[in-house]
Image (cartoon, rainbow, N blue to C red; front, side):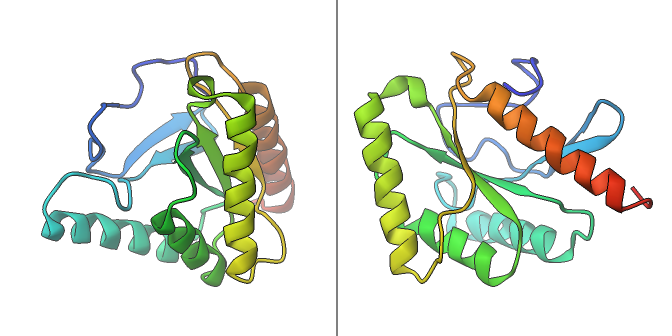
Length: 165
């Protein structure tokens, strides 16, 4: 959605399609990186463990990481695995935002109640505030401009403050 290239990344109705770390150079000056999912893939436990190690290693060793986007399907209520993953991100001091996806698939009222449920779960897990989040739909471009503006602001700040990029 954010690159205007529908087939840039492989997607599938079956979780676990992304099995590698894929780097996409955007506007010749920053990278968007697609990582394997952390819990829903219908693969063996061993393969899932490898995915999780990829993700952990990437987040803990990637010095240039500016912000991770945790994609969450808004159609589902707060999932324990998502809360645990975001808690790991917070405890590890890894900057991230939440991107709630597929907002075109449910009503505005359900969107609001699902976000409220995530907020409640995060507060119950000792978060002082809900992380920055965006509600999106790739098919209807909902949230696209807000997300692109955020990315632009973050990139401007990084490039202004860090001459090594």
